[in-house]
Image (cartoon, rainbow, N blue to C red; front, side, top):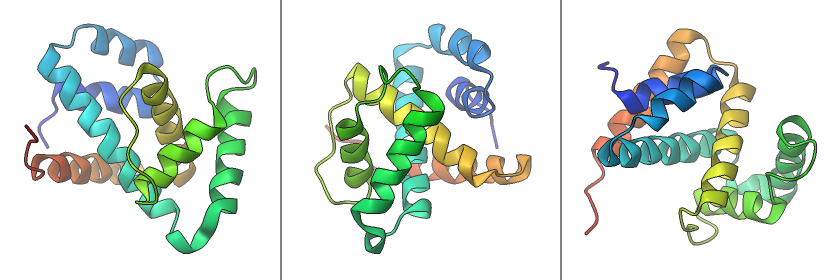
Length: 144
C-alpha cells in the first residue's frame, strides 16, 4: 500500500504517537486534510460496524461511550456522551450523520482510537484495516 501523508498521520495517531500525528496534520494541504477526514470517517464506520450490530442495542453503545470517557476523558471535558452516542448510531445507520464540526471530529477521533485499540490488531492487521479503509473511500463517488 502506498503511504500518503494522511495515511501516515492516521497510523501515528492509532499507534499513540500523538506528537508525530500532529506534526503531519499541521503540514496538510487542504486536499490532504479532506482525505484524512475521509479516512478517519471510513475507519470509524468500519470499526463501529465490526464492534456493534444493530441487535446490540443502545446499552452496548452507552457502555462503550462510558468506557471511552473513563479511559480518554477523565475530566469529562472532551467527550459529550450525547454526541458520542449519536455518532455511533449514525455510523450504524440509526441516525442522520452529524456535521463535521470541531467537536464532532474530536469525539469521532477519540472513539476511533478506542475502537481500534480495543481490537488490538497486529501490525499486519492494522495495515490491512487501513488498506481496506483506503480502498473503501476510493470507491465512493465524490458528492458535489
